[in-house]
Length: 355
Ligand SMILES: Cc1cc2nc3c(=O)[nH]c(=O)nc-3n(C[C@H](O)[C@H](O)[C@H](O)COP(=O)(O)O)c2cc1C
Image 1 (spheres, rainbow, N blue to C red):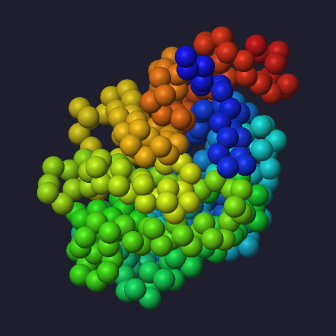
Image 2 (cartoon, rainbow, N blue to C red):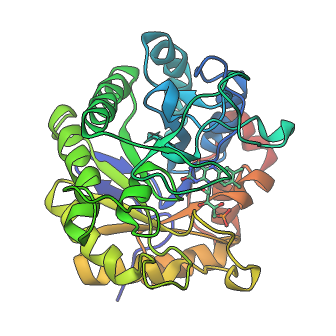
């Protein structure tokens, strides 16, 4: 009989999560010079105080060109390390673990703040020339094709950012390889039209991600878990589209190269039809990857209540539930879930009189 439930701890390498609930990365567009602000302390800190076992930061750029908007956060300099430290410490003081989601937006960069319309920004207006696997139009702009030398530099930026993450005290690192951002722009043939060793075959298209995983794994402690978020499917009905079968193959390669945990998300190049977005709509991706590769998986997408979240774990369909929008409505999702399911969890002593 499976006795694992939503509040059963999970150990990954030497990190133990107190439960199976993670705050999903969500861009807050509230950074200043790539530094997180008090907004991030409160946003991440309150979900930690609300009982989540794992807090994952929003996508955090490894270089200024890796950003999406100028209000994103980063980890390319020492000032940013110092700005992250109190946030990391506060989250850990609540008994939660914290991951930084390292990222490069590639061809999706150089956009205005969402409150200013999220429009492509020109160089004259403070933007930058975006670069990608190929010069394929995305988000209204045609990026330049990256040279192999530029790709080497980006790999180095990931390595340096990973070292800074360790210095800032993060418990773990997640590489963002989904949602139409740079790594996904390489592995999906929808965008990648290169003719060198980074384009064409499946092996060539995943090479840039795999090489970056190897480089990051080599500089972080052996005891530290390495997580990756992928888009398990492109949600596109074309022969070039990335498929779940591709994701299973990619996941095997990621595991062989030291990845411990994969969150199976989806999409990033096209608007996903609303009819495809229902409760737990991406769970089959996490389940297939878990069953076919044995890797620990996180499931994300419309996980919105305690019973649904607990069922996913008790049925062994995924190892962690990764929750985004429900957490915008309910920062204490985890504590409330424990109460509803009549399971034990810690409540901050400051809040005990409320329960
Ligand atoms: C405001 C907002 C910002 C997001 N930013 C990120 C991000 O930085 N990194 C990421 O991997 N996903 C990001 N996402 C996607 C979510 O993490 C999640 O995959 C998606 O919202 C589906 O989960 P949900 O149905 O629980 O919201 C964002 C979603 C929202 C709503």
